[in-house]
Length: 519
Image 1 (cartoon, rainbow, N blue to C red):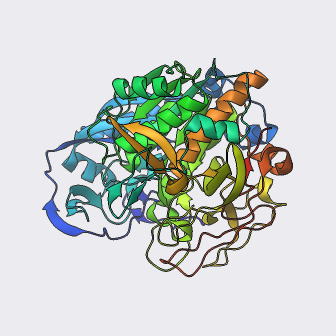
Image 2 (cartoon, one colour):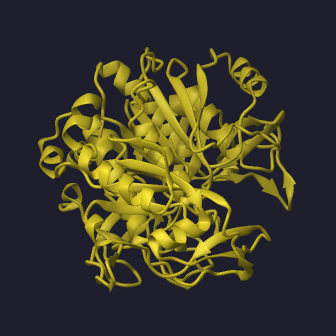
Image 3 (cartoon, rainbow, N blue to C red):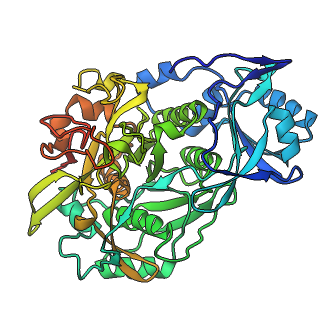
């Protein structure tokens, strides 16, 4: 990434990568200066992690904290800064490299030299936002790498789609081409004789919730033992189910898919608010959770790279580097709006955090079977705005493991960056996943389903191999034919853009290397 311009305001300097453009939304007046808010500060590591990443060895949480966590003197410098502006330390974590501080809006405006205002979002809700850069004291330059929570604008969207016809919801019985997740695991040749016992699957959720009675009924209907499922609050986020038309669909899809594939694995669902602060805090909490110790994390939320600040892109990417070193596999949905990723500028875009080089980006296919045999599988593309996400990052350069792969240049800018996705699986709602949401038997598609499907697979492989798979991309790209069945038909060009990518022999920016095929 290009270095940010340094601007000095007195004893303050611009926080690199913090600049935000004008908010898209009608102004709704000033924020209450006395409102109490929480803000997350991300700090630097004690030392660089890059050499350890190249080594490829997995380390434990204690070693990570000792070698790469926040230094005590950096915490002290930030705490002194907070006290000067009457801000209170709520939480600090060395391994997460995180300090959470609380205080009045007016105190934060003074502390970070920003102006906060209210705006009306497209759905009518009011959010707190900022424009321009965040500034930090010159003595904290290099110590502070990111500041999140000054804005509380909803940031990500779930990558799931409910099957309906002309606005009418389709039930299991009416969806002849749909599948249960365990059925897909058998069709795709997932390992037999293992159920994920001894593993923990972390699931990130930025809204919605689950009901135990639904989960009990769902797994009973499949004839599968219900997995142990725990809700974990992050920043006050709660398991808060409401109705099937809410984010409950995403939550239940994730839990039921992962659980049907690996019922022996414990699940921890990390609930946080849908803001950049909530998202990054949930991710770092899950990665560095020494109590539950997830070996794989599923994320089905995201937004186009263009919608993120550079500090956010960097902060997530650095968190995923830590996951790699800790042996935690990160599976992320690549998006559901084809090559445009729902941006309406007529250009191609990829979804983040799926475009991070340190995650397994999960794309979508349309699967047709005869019995339990694959008869045809193509790129998922309904021709409108529903299609598997994929393309080329405009932010992250081609990672080492993709250097020998035929990654194309961006169809819009001709930049050659990290190619997305890495693998794919069934995601078309018309051939979707049978789930139970708030008492309703529904069918969902979207790459949201592929992330927990892959997470379940990783849990099975971890148990089978008696070892954490960790960051799988280098091995996947070294011998893709060993792990994947190629998808060579279809494209991800939708009506919202005339640009995009087509499936081809080998890796492509629609389905990556294809479908994981572990027979």
